Image (cartoon, rainbow, N blue to C red; front, side, top):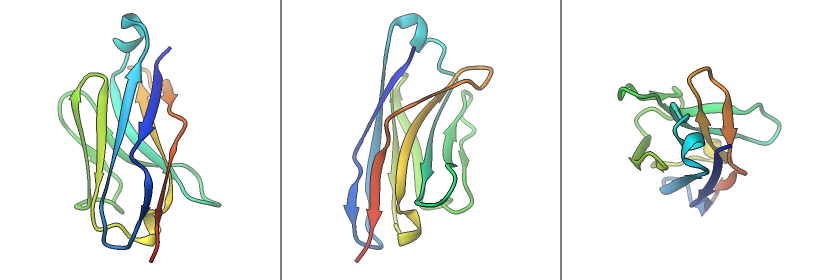
Length: 118
């Protein structure tokens, strides 16, 4: 099983930036099943939604609401990031790191709170 831990959340003023990090761990066989890396978020009273996905092959996918402001990246197979710029109050949510295998089965982190407020 893949274990995911997010970090980097916090409180920021509108227009500010944050960088979230996700660290994956587990036995080598489990880690080798990671096919798509991604970020989701869930705001109070709303369903969890996709923010950014990084499938193998380099075709990054972003929610329309974050295009041009958020950037997903990785430095190796076990660590990936979400750079968030020009944050607004609408971005306030719990952000979850996600790792999916080839058939879409997902492992989730525990979530990290991002609060955008003046």
